[in-house]
Each structure stands twice: as C-alpha cells, then as structure tokens.
Image (tube, rainbow, N blue to C red; front, side):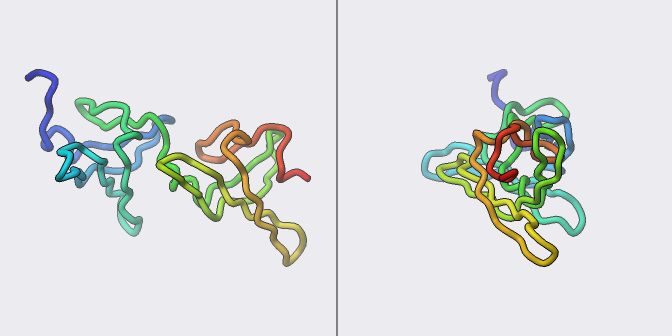
Length: 144
C-alpha cells in the first residue's frame, strides 16, 4: 500500500501553481460519495480572500510538502491584465467562461475612450501565456 496516502498527507499542505506561485493551504478534500473518488481540494487563500476550489484535474501530484498543480485554475484569471504580444496593455479579464471543466473563453474589458469600454471575447487559442498577466499572440482581436 505504498502508493496510497491519507487526508493527513494532503490537508495543511501548500498548493503551488505551475509557475511556482503559492496559492494557499489545502483545508478540505471533496469526495464523490457515490463513485468514491477525489473530486478536488479547497485552498484557503488567506485573510480576506475567498476559498478556492481546485478540481482534481488541476492537480499534478501530492508531494511531501506541497500539492503541485499542472495548470492554473481558470477562475484565477479573472481580474488579470491582458497584454498584446508586444507588451501593450489591452484591458482586464472581467469574466472566465468554463465549459465541461475546460476554458471556453475570457471576456476582456477594453477601454475605447475616456468613459467608454468594450467587452471582447478571447478564445483560448489566442492566449500565448497565462501567469501574472495574460499575454496574447501578436495577431489578436483586441488590437483591432
């Protein structure tokens, strides 16, 4: 039974995203009572921040000191700044659209004038990199 672990091996561990950023501490396990499988974990992100549910599909491994994620939970993209491939600030993510556990699109608010904003949908294939900021490929809908 060397490959099995207990809740004590997971609870209290730090959750780390693929970029090495600390997300918080694992405080809950979510188990499907009918299938008897682990569905995900809840991460306490700290004072004045909401708890974060992380689906098991985002977990790469349960390490000795940390829970390592294989991809950033999509809802963490909300509020991130969006930059063009050249580094031009284009706007910020207002909504994250998820379908069947996969990212479908990001809604990005783009400033079009002194008091006007336009919301534009960005598909996942337009995203070059998602970390502290979201960097789009050079040709993208926001630069039109």
